[in-house]
Image (cartoon, rainbow, N blue to C red; front, side, top):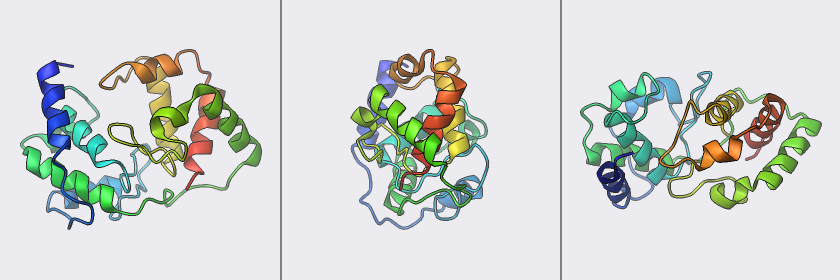
Length: 190
């Protein structure tokens, strides 16, 4: 990532609108995939409710600047001002998080395996022990299980990179079965 763009994204994130903001007009389009209350019912599309505003701001700027490709997001981000992006981020950050509407039943053995893997991999260091995320680290608790599994595989397979390569290194060599356990454990967290 170009240092100037990263610096601009982080600077923009510092001026986030306070929590409790009203839904900006642009959020109507977001709701189509991410859910009216920020909880996605769309397969492989993340829930945004309760996501850290800085994380959403950074991702939207990466989409807008063509540094991250996850169709149709780059197209939607085109032409948005920093202020519009900050309003969208503040709105979704202010929504109460919760499980994805189609979250399945908890598989106790799979969740326990995922918890052990998460502890061994130190996921709670960056995403916090309750997995609510912070700053540029996304909320994982209650996220869509299919989205988590897909994203973790993309990091492992070097098909997705963030603003640094930390997640690629963390996921290197992790099996599909372990990814399934991690995704299930995190999706079942509230």
